Amino acid sequence: MEDLKQTIKTILEEVKILEEKIDETTKKAQEITQIVEPSATESLKEVIKFTEESSNKIISEIDKVEENCKIIDKEVDKLLALNPIN
Image (cartoon, rainbow, N blue to C red; front, top):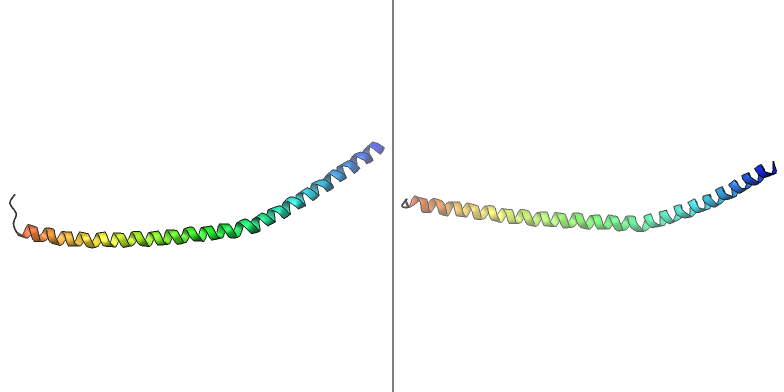
């Protein structure tokens, strides 16, 4: 019976140590989350902003290409109207 009491006492001590370790780990995890979360959010905002700006630049360049294609089409039509030789 004494062995059983000693074993239970040892298990309870180990559980108490484990509980302290879990509390310590939980506190550290909360601290890390408070530090990392705002940083990650800010980084994501920067990526979104960069993507939006890049997309707008690409669309602007596509518009320029489209305008140039229209100009080229008009010039080609004018040249073809001159009845070029085969």
